[in-house]
Image (cartoon, rainbow, N blue to C red; front, top):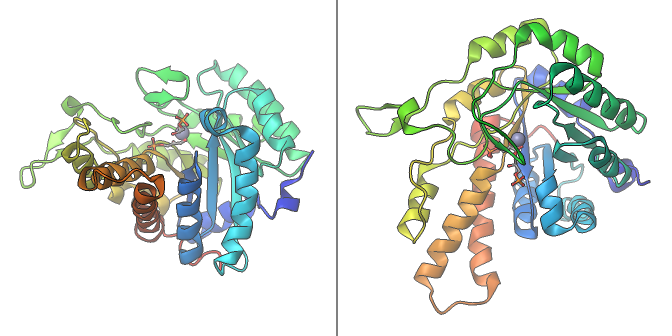
Length: 333
Ligand code: G3H
Ligand code: 13P
Ligand code: ZN
C-alpha cells in the first residue's frame, strides 16, 4: 500500500472546491506515454495550473500500470525542476469499470479514481459506486461516479445514443454513493466523431458544420439540485479543425471529425463543471505533428526527431485549453 501523499500528489477535493467557487475548471488530460506526460507537465508548470493526470484501463494495459504510476511520481519531481514550487497534480483513474481496478489504483498511489458504472441499472450503479467510495475514502482518495450515458465509446462500454443525466436522480445518487464528484451526460461524447454530419447545421459564412448545443438546461437543473457540488464533463475535446486538416493533408483519413465548440466549454467551465476531460485533442495534435514532420522529412528515422515537434504541439494545445478555455491558469501558484 502506497499513499499518494508520499508521492507529492493531491486529491481533487480542494482543487474542485476552489474551481467551483472561482468559476473555472481543472483540466483532466489523459496520458499513455512519456511525451504526453512531459507536455502536460510543461504546460501546467508554465501556466501554474492545477492538473489531473488521467490514466485509463487501456493506458495501463498499453504502458504497464507500474511504469505509469512511477511516471506520475516522476512528474511531480519534474514539475518542481521546471520551477513550479508547489505543484498541484492529481493522479486519477479514468473510467474504472470494477471495484478491483479501483482498489488496485488506490493501493498503488492514485489520489483519485473514477468508477464508471453508468451502463448498469441505477441501483447497481449506486451499489458499486458506493463500494468504491467507501474503500477509497479510508485513504482520503476522492471518487468520481457517473450518472447518465454518453454517446460514443467509453472504453469497452459502448452506447448507441446518449441518455442525458436525469436531474431528479442526482441528489439520491450522490447522497447514497458518497461520491465526491459527478460525471454527467449533457450532450458530450468520446472520440473525434462526436456528431454525425446529419445532426449538425452548416454555418452559412464559413461552410463549417455546427454541432447541436450542449443541454445547458439539464446542466443548470443539476446545479440547482446540488449547489456547489463538483460536476465533471467527459468527452470534451473540441477536435480542432487545423489538426484534422493537417492529418488529412499528410496522408490521414479523418472524414467529418467533429468536436464540442470551445465557447460552449468555456461557458460550462464557469458553472459547477469543475473538471473537463480532454484526450482526443492530444491524440490529434500528436498525430498531426508526426504526420507533417515525417512527410516533410522522409529521411528521418530517429523517433526524437518527430516526437519533439509532436510534444511541442501538444504543449501548445494544453496551454491554449488551460488559458483560453478552462481558465485554470495561475490557480496553483
Ligand atoms: O474516455 C476515454 C479516454 O479517452 C481513454 O481512452 O480507453 O482509449 O485509453 P482509452
Ligand atoms: P475526448 O475523447 O473528447 O477527448 O474525451 C476524453 C474523456 O472523456 C476521457 O475520459
Ligand atoms: Zn471519459
